[in-house]
Image (cartoon, rainbow, N blue to C red; front, side, top):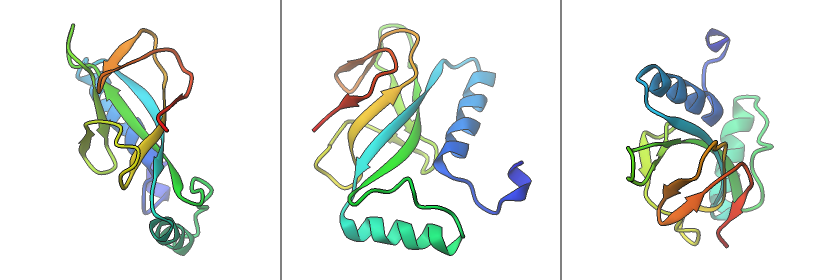
Length: 128
């Protein structure tokens, strides 16, 4: 299936990263976020995706949907939020900043600590 496309979206990067982590016996969970961006950046994203004949339905007026991985860091240690699309660690919410997280949902089987928050279950958590 990957051979049929010349580019991958965040969901594909997240799925690949999660499988690699699973193969390494590293506990991890899928995460969905809504991020805040300036309108000009959203317009830029839309043009990039439309140029590739892909749908920009994951974009709002100043928000974007994105998929990440929550990686357990060991017993008693906070988890790490990993963005496999960019190869970066998301340190905190920073909801007012460029790309700041305004909502997060993780598919958790147990409570997990991240950035001073305890995340649990599968409900959306809003940081407005």
